[in-house]
Length: 277
Image (tube, rainbow, N blue to C red; front, side):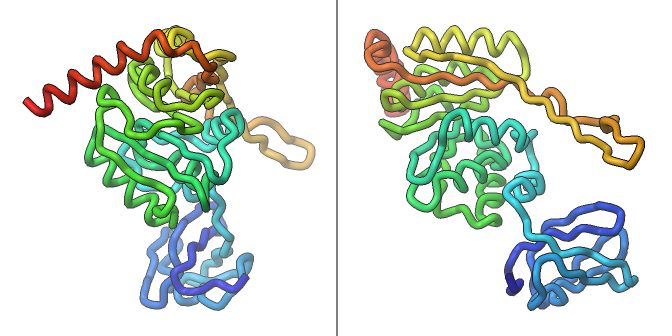
């Protein structure tokens, strides 16, 4: 595939440092091994080599979804690819689905969700922090997924606009507070996923899920460790991406939510009344 102006390139240095950048005729990119004229990448194929002004080689690789997630501009901790991949598989997110993400943070998971629902689905990304939301918007736009994401500035207690969505993902300090509103928006048989760093959060979330009509509730932790492969002395790496959070999943059962509908409606009506007042 020939690289064109504006295409993303993932540059790999001789000492295994990586850089995600767009190839442009007028852009010079500074690295620890010298400046790179990015117009040198235009017209080349992925897998070829370009050189810095110091003569240091950089291999041009085609960026993956993981590369784009890990290189977002961060104002918050991101949901790592190891957790995002399990969220995608356990919830069954696919093209054409409608997904609510509450707590968009820096937008790393938003990118993964948008990639999964494209080209016919939609991600509704909520966050209560305006600065986080604007940063996530920039990151999503930079990676080319803006058409599949709608951002909303909102507290979780104000509820969600969407109904009959397929999936809700909660990345909140108190996810149990979002569960009743998620339950109201998810279609029967739809799924929910939540990420929390502590056992106490998981316990409260699981209790709330059960209360609001979710079944098949399970919590999982994903640990990833790289292996140093060297002839005659292969062993695990000293560092690893260990605990980032506990993932809790559930599925909405029909008929188990009705007894709580009036409670939620009353809360939302009170919020509307307060805003009008």
